[in-house]
Amino acid sequence: MPASEAIEFLASYDVRVSEVMPGLTLILYDTGCTVFISPLADHFCVEIRCDAAINGIGKRSVKIAGPIPISFLDDKAEHYVTYESPRGFYMEDLNFGIFPSGQAEKIEWKFHVRELNPYFIADGHHVPLIKDHQTGLTWMAERRFAKPIVEAKRRFLKSFAQDSSARSFPDRVGMPEIRPKYPDTKENIDRHLNSAGISSCRQYH
Image (cartoon, rainbow, N blue to C red; front, side, top):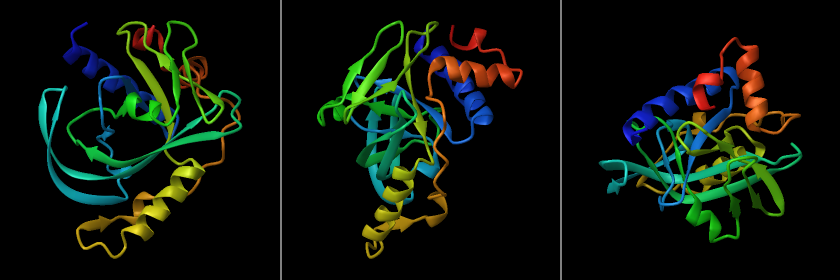
């Protein structure tokens, strides 16, 4: 499948998951990307003007950057693991976020990307990855209202409060979610989709 078609296809899948499972966002695992990229304004509780060119998905100009925290639920649904990007980029016309695995590997995150039951290890915890068997791409299930994300955003707002070059958006922080009882595995996401009457079969099998 050409990359352009994969982007359109998977963007549709991502929207469906978010509709059925509020607070859950699928972001693309990418070994080649060196910065975190997101189309979601809610990721940026602090915006800093910039003028950067992002290569790799076409060549796009980016005007907004900012610190971003990203949390994932472990495979026992007992702990969150969190990655903080000091400088993520807001790309509104992209249909999904992109996670730079190389940056996470620098802090000893270990990725095991395989066809069956892919996962990564962070801070001693195993976290499920989601393999799209039609495109061959791998997704990470971000918990946008995990307690560590909310706490980090509050800290960012405080840190940048006196920075005249930054714009703050307290309404993008949200309240901490109740930690789910089950991990964000491919099977559990399938189950939620099917219970909502949405067939997952044509989406990533």
